[in-house]
Image (cartoon, rainbow, N blue to C red; front, top):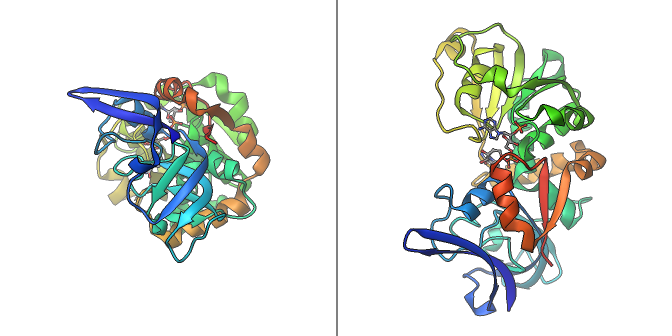
Length: 326
Ligand code: NDP
């Protein structure tokens, strides 16, 4: 038997609770992992609260991330005792996920724990942090180097945003951030922001082209804010877009793309190819300051996951949340 957050559906009623589950209910897979840490991402909060159709079948154990130790393996790459990490692949959406003491998955979805990280640090990074790294790598691929000018990060006090600020500042970029929580300015400056802008300046519809300011941007918000960011990109600038915390829409025009050669680079972590994942984790080991990672992380027990999910969607959670599972 093991403890798990279980989401169940009864008619239209979706409920999440902490349950005791038998090993015989674990899904199919060739590797069983004793989960040490999981985490709470925006998508997990949507799944747990039922606020968006993230979960594809019920009952479901949420948790798109976990880090733990292999208990049983029929996969050639893993043996009992190996430390492993999982991010995405539909885990926590269509296959039981990491917010449980045990997980059974396809071994191809795992990556070995990247040295020098601990299991806890790997989850402090989690999907949010690894996505932030993918965004930075997307900017680099489009030639946004530190000398090119200011780089903007939206939703900066959240998980993806906080890690993106820490990474970009360590890499030598001039980082400007947008937040709806000006009271977090001190926190954001410690992470490396040189200027903190208020979200409300970005919320109203603007002109198709605004004054050129940003050489690059990492956007976790979407909607009108992303449209306004695109309008203010410098000539041949790039926006790495990964999120929808402010909405699914994108009320922009083609002007920034056809008149300024702006690139909108989409970033997906869920089905991201294995080589790129391994490269992102290697880069995180080089480019993420462990002291900053500690400073942006809060730890909770499995029993606090459900109330914390609601607080996260209300924009009240700062940085990253790790879940100490077992
Ligand atoms: P968090 O909740 O930790 O952070 C989101 C941040 O967005 C908030 O902290 C807040 O920042 C800002 N925000 C929230 N609501 C609004 C709003 N209505 N308008 C404008 N800004 C808002 O979430 P994560 O960092 O974990 O995830 C961020 C986004 O990235 C989510 O949409 C998530 O689904 C997406 N994501 C996508 C991935 C991919 O593979 N493409 C992977 C991981 C995440 P502040 O308080 O500073 O304003």
